[in-house]
Amino acid sequence: MLAGIAIPIGGFLAWYDKISPDWGEESFHHAIIAFGGGALISAVALVLVPEGADRLSPFPAIFCFSLGGIAFYSLDCFLDRLGGSVAQLVAMMSDFIPEAIALGATFATGDSSALLIAIMIGLQNLPEGFNSYRELIENPQLSSRNVLIAFCLLSLLGPVSAYIGIEFFAGREAWLGSLMLFAAGGILYLTFQDIAPQVVLKNSRLPALGAIAGFALGLIGYMMTT
Image 1 (spheres, one colour):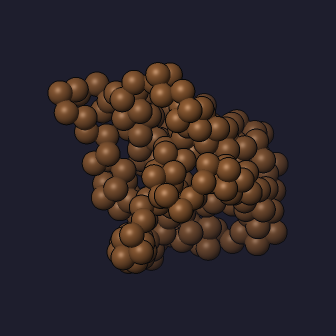
Image 2 (cartoon, one colour):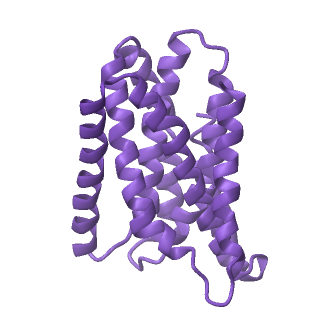
């Protein structure tokens, strides 16, 4: 729950930004998008791929990773035909759910680093919740109230996913590795297809530094838990 509650908190910050537009400049908004993208890439590079690859042999690992990219490509095409963009939300949940499942499996083993991992997942979810709200609210059919309520409900996926990790994935290394690599492939596709292009801001290169800060956050968590 600690990791998941960061999603609606990020959404509330984005809501406040909408009603108080002077609170943040455009370059700041683009930097937050870049920060979220950097955090997602750090999750792929430092958590999902290494942990997943350790649990599988090379061929199944490549297969699951590639399958994830293809599956999310198909999902992206489907959502595009519906006329909406929810790339940041899909990427956020694709990151959060497998990490929460792995977190549950970590708790099941009694690893003392589990709480720190939960905090780092929460810090990743904060900018991703911010970006997802801004992306979703562009749809005129969605109200701020409904999006924020949905974010609060999504935060409950944290403890649910952790429970699944404890009950079904603890000790089943191949299944957990397959899930993590599948999610990694999907996140990497969405990051380069939909999220990274939103970072670019005409006449300013500073927002791209947000990606460095986001990846640095993931690196700090990785070094503190290994």
